[in-house]
Length: 433
Ligand code: S3P
Image (cartoon, rainbow, N blue to C red):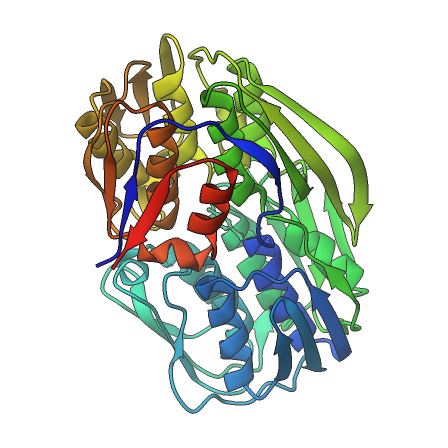
């Protein structure tokens, strides 16, 4: 089992580029596979999650050439996918499983989707139920868990669906299924969630109408190949935003990071806590806003996190909890029950880790209360959750002893090269098998 060993202290400096955005990488493969023509992608995340998506489309007959983060996808059109020989293994990736389920629901062949132990415990009814309303035929394990068997269907029907949770995975799953449905599908979101699917569909020439909380899409539209330059993942940049904020005398520039407003909750929350973060060279690349982010050490203070920011920072809470542990006073998070169904139960797992490190925390069903304090060394469990492992390693910058983080191999799902990049910028950590 892989563990991280983190020596206490450190100053964080430099100018770094984090790997490509995971959400956009998944979508780039999915949409270019069902487009007409060849699409060239640069900046693709070479992490296990997005590579699982890539392999799934290869298994469905799409020719995909890869030279590191440069990808050339030879699209087969909306109806050109072929039945894969084996089950499609989505590994640890909820995004891959939920988005592919939507796409596969409208194919003319049966498929099986499976995943690792964590993914096999994550709720799939949130996508299965609306897909069944569209006439999809999906068998799941008790409680709506994977493995999932998707039966061939040629007659999906458009629906009007009001989503009970703000989830970009649910929204994107339904947008993909809607491409195979008769008529116009309308999806209503209870609060904004990341909108990469809508943006990317438009860049492939598809008409997607967003009007307030409503999104409309017509079935049967043709996607036309395009080029994509994927920006750095703000969810990976977040570890360095917090690292440079909590470490002394630190200053980091994160180059070429995606700052889509549906993803920048982490910056807004850190700014409310008193962080020193500036966005430089703001520009738009392929329909997505991008910037260089400059972050300097600051004295953080505890806050009540506004609930409206929760979906916009949903993946960044493990490291935001580290910021809260280093802040003066109390930080209160509410309205974040979704954290309990991520790669791990991030409320419980982070609460356990922080308690081991001497921080006073009170987990709640929908959030947590964290008292800022002094961080001790200790042995903590990531429970195979990549973001928990990276967040706990950032805590070492303010720790008084060594922090050992167990079960950290899954960092490769979203952030290959994390240990090297973190070491290069001043964290003193190493990875052991
Ligand atoms: C993602 C959406 C989020 C996020 C996940 C990636 C996506 O999940 O947690 O890491 O790419 O659509 P939910 O939409 O379920 O909140």
